[in-house]
Image (cartoon, rainbow, N blue to C red; front, side, top):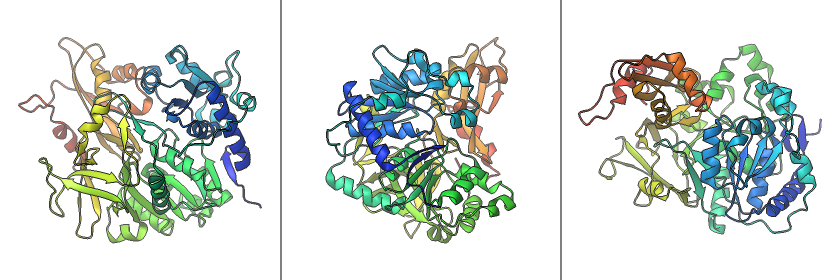
Length: 511
C-alpha cells in the first residue's frame, strides 16, 4: 500500500500541495480582514486540519497564532481574546456556541463545522456542531479567497498563554528569529525532535499546548506525514503507528501509563517497529514507567526539559537515561543552565538550587502586556520558571522540586493561584489552599483545602459544582477537604509543604 503524505486528520487527508494552496488562500483572506505583521489570530479548536491551516496562514502574514485551550469557560476565553488583541477568531462550531458572548465587538469569527470524528470522540450532539445560521463555513470561506502573493517573513512561534502564578495567564510573545537564530533552531529541532525530511509524525496531544503546537507546525515543513489524533486513545495510537508506519511522535508520560495499562496481548498485536524518535516532556516521568517504555520501544524514547518561555534546555536519549536513571539530560548545544542559591550564587555540583537558563537558538520574548513579569524572572541574562534541580558530575540534570506553586497534571500546567482566586470568590469561603497530590495516571491531581467563613457551611461537591462554571474542567479540584484552619508561618504565609508532604511521603518524590 502506498504511504500517505501530507496532513491527515480523521478521514480528512490533504496533500502538501493542497495544504499550501489553502494556506495561501487563508492568508489572503486574513489580509482582507486587516491582519498584518505583529497582529494576532486566535484559534479555539480541538485537533483538526483547519487548526494548522489557520496557524500557518497567520504565520504567513507575519502575525501570531494564539491557540486557546478549548476546555476554557467563557470568562477565560474572553480574557485571552482581550489581552491578545485578537482581531480574528477561528473556532469550531460547537465551541463558538459556547463562547460567542465572550467575543468583543469587531472580532471576526471564522467558523469551522465540528467534524463527525470529533463529535464522536467527544460526544458532541449534532445540533451543537451545526453551523450557526448565516455563517459561512471555513472551507467555503477559504475557497472564496484570492491567494496571498506576499512572501512569508521568517516564521515566529505561536503565542501560547501560560497559566499565571498570580492567577492571570501570560502570553509568551517571542520575537521574530534572525537568519542565524533560524538556522540554529532548525539544527536544535533535528537534534531534540529527530526532525528529518520525510518523517512521519503522529500528534496525539492537543495543539493548544506549546510543545505539540511547535512540533506539529515544524513537522509540517518536513514533507512526510503529519497525523492528528482527535484525542488520545492508547490502542488507537498503536493502530495508527502500524497503519501509517509512524516514525516520530511527541507524547507526555500520562500517555505512557495508558499504553502500559493495555493488556499485553493488545500491545503485542501492533507493529511499532517503525518508531525512530518519540519525544516526551512537559511532566516528570516515573522511572518504572520510562524503563518499561524503553524496553518496549527499543530505545526510540528521548526526553527534553524546557518550558514555553525557554524551548528545550536539556536532552537525553534512552541509553543516556539508562546510565543516569531519573535525569532529564545534559544541556543542548548553545544552551546555558545554572543552579543558583537564594543570593544568586552558583551552587556546587550535586547541590540543588533554582534553575536559571538560556537557549541561544531561541529568540528572546516578552509577556504580552506584562513586561514587568518578564523582568522578574531574569537574572544576569538567564531566566527561571521556578524549577529546582542539580547537576551530577557528568553534567546531567535532575529535577527535584518546584519553587513556584505549579501543578503538572497529565502534562498540563495548572497554577494554584488561579484556582484559589476562583475559590475565594465563592460565597462562604474564608480561606483556602490548592496544591498537587500524587495520581497514578496523571502524575498529580488537584486538591483544595478550604476554611469556611464564620457561620458558613460548605460542602465539597457544592464547591466543585460552583467552580465548574468558572474554570476549565482540568483545573477543577479532584478532592476538596473542609477544615477549621490552615497552617501558617509567623508571617501569615500558608505552609503548603505541611499540607502537601503527607500525601507524597510514600511516593519517593518531592514536589
